[in-house]
Image (cartoon, rainbow, N blue to C red):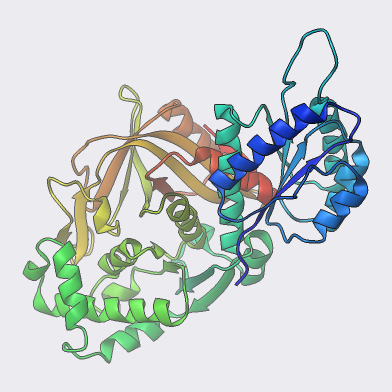
Length: 447
């Protein structure tokens, strides 16, 4: 499998102050190697079209860092864009090292204008841009965030997402088409019926599921108090889902839940989805495919489980929004004072589901991949803090104090027709998600 590659392309001409340029070249190489595992770096600055083309022959980039090490005319950027039409670009302008009334050492900024003009002529998608030296904090942050976003875009090309069952009536906002998912996100979507996994689960014996029940019992408090039939059926379903995910190399699932698992199986799938989320498989309920993809992106950026749920309450004085769902949150998100507790579904009164308030987090991101009224994809992004709050309602819940106005977030998302499911990510990844939207050619609402 191809490894994610960052290509550093420092272009210029030899008529500027090469001693200053060489210092910036060395520091830029050091920064990129600090931020990425696989960086293709030329042996020297690319100060002619011939040297540029020779280096371009050796790379297979997934992100291009195009830097004006000195001024370079548009021909340099044209060569890069002609070779790599769909690769994301970070255009990097260096700060003039000295302003002393003497010689212009680099003239990097004028070169950036030539490159940017060329990039916009070649492609519609936005490119990323940063101005500054390689030791500046804002440069490190921007370059790092761009690398992480590009790596995420690369990972999506290897993601297989499974839609298990259809969305319930009235929940069509989460339904996806396989060709559209592949074209827009690079993700392969496969679909199966819930009946297939239910039938598989029913065929397992209690002995075959004993290890799954033991694993869940170590994570869920009070699972042993769940009615025996439901407890055993949950273990069967857990085994069926886990084996399906493993055998088919599935990285995320969007599973139908009600009414099938209550009516056709007698036990909800909620706790099974919680187990998968703990195992690193993004798992949304109500067959929300774009919700599952949103979860996957958050999990990849932070390395931890994300919360999936509805915005159900707002407190204008606290500037908070409460998010809730029936009980599918990963056990690892539970408050330490309560742990992840077993319960029953708040409407159907059948278990096991999960019952807890989520643990706090100083920096968090609210996120959703959605579609506007024209069918165009868009990203919603907001930042805040997950507060140290107890369980708000039956099921699993958390409370986010938003950086921006919570009232504006609610009004904007309702008035602009955003979907009712959101992902709360444990970590501040707003910049990475916004950059990813640029790379995918999608609009962002960032509040």
